[in-house]
Image (cartoon, rainbow, N blue to C red; front, side, top):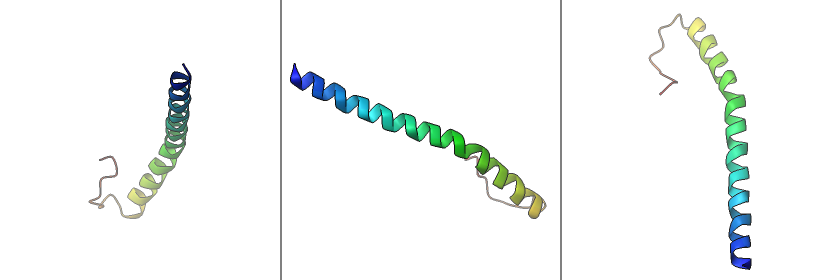
Length: 53
């Protein structure tokens, strides 16, 4: 039974880490889009880089 509890604790820890990554990703996405728009306006849309890929 202790082994199952230890496994469950490890899984909870991993789920917590994944959730934190998702939250950070969600918070950074608008910043990335804002930077992409600024770069687009600076170079007049001539950029060959695709940040969506």
